[in-house]
Length: 174
Image 1 (tube, one colour):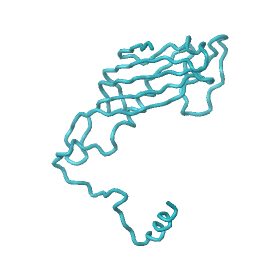
Image 2 (cartoon, one colour):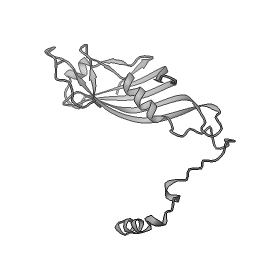
Image 3 (cartoon, helix red, strand yellow):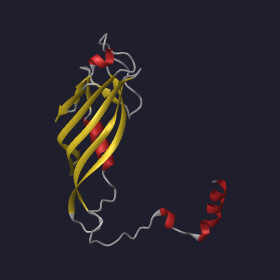
Image 4 (cartoon, one colour):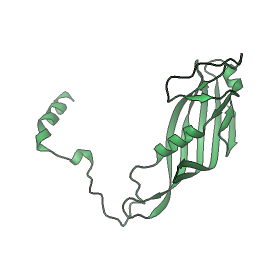
């Protein structure tokens, strides 16, 4: 298995993969020094391992992403850096036929990425979206955070007597 490496680049020419039979795979590693996640948030030291699989419609990209981000603790407001990971899966469809050069219909599903007319598959937006998903929604700088404990309680600790009858029904079903 040959693994190709991309350094500070997210564009892969997939013309040969589009000509290959269904089930053909290609493997890549990607390293980005910086990745803009939002207008005020940036990921750094982004590493991804990517598997591209030829499907009947296009190419399925799967893999794992690791990203570092500079966040603010929600308890003590201290700024800290931490590393996060996320697995991803996305489908890419070509916009032109690789053999004839004729335009293909656009996918109706907005979650499907497209391969441009030059047969370039760009991983940038996929990596950006999944890097955002990897970030915690409630970032805490660590177990020794000096800030106050959360006033929120985990869902299983919330007890409401008015819902006890419904809970009993759910327990019976289980």
